[in-house]
Image (spheres, rainbow, N blue to C red):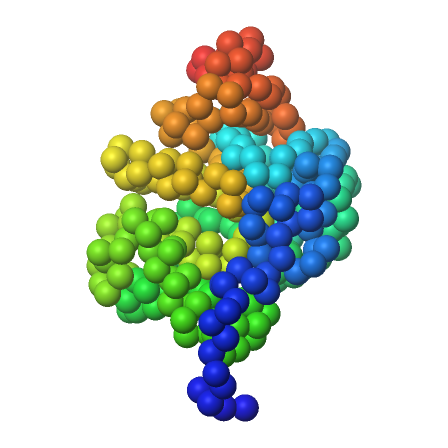
Length: 287
Ligand code: ADP
Ligand code: MG
């Protein structure tokens, strides 16, 4: 079909053909109907997850859950199992035992990596992976195109809505003035923000970020915290990070912080609460 010959349908806003998360009408996530059931308020649920490498338990009956819309910070010493937990959630590593659910109904242990990404989980690795030879805006366009269902559903409204989404995302990641530059020319912090923008083009319901502030300057780190704070409510997030100022900027006074050690949850509470926790001081903060 010649798409150009079709009359653009101007009566429907961008969001019209994508449905919101069931039970969280206000969040505005793009998921297929019924795909993520957050009617009980939980976007991610892990119960007694165990992963062994040659008999060593990288995760040892790890149980943890994240509320829909929450921004959860996870801290803990090196080797605590934080990255392994993200590997399990994204299907890179199969747990030996335990439950891993997205919403009430999606058993992530039964899905492979691409299926988990399609189900709505985006993952940001430590090192930014952008298309260096392409302009910033084109990186966002390419990221959107990899979401086949979304792309196909745009049809005649494709150009207008794609453009609008790219512009919206450029604004969110504060790279409007860099849109025409090659991604390879960006600073490290800008590349990290671009990669988050690329993930956002896929409209994740849950975003996992593993030490996103690593290697950033103090200014870049605070700019990243501001970006993640702006994303609140548009997707749930789990952020693993060592930089305590960054964690403080994300968690605020009331946000829940999870402390992991030896493959399980050591403590959980506000940043103040976990900082005062004796077991946390012993095993992590007080070193
Ligand atoms: P963190 O991200 O909290 O620093 P990791 O999840 O990377 O911790 O690692 C947890 C433990 O599991 C570490 O002792 C690490 O050496 C071990 N580990 C992680 N991945 C593997 C693997 N593929 N094979 C063997 N051991 C691993
Ligand atoms: Mg790690």
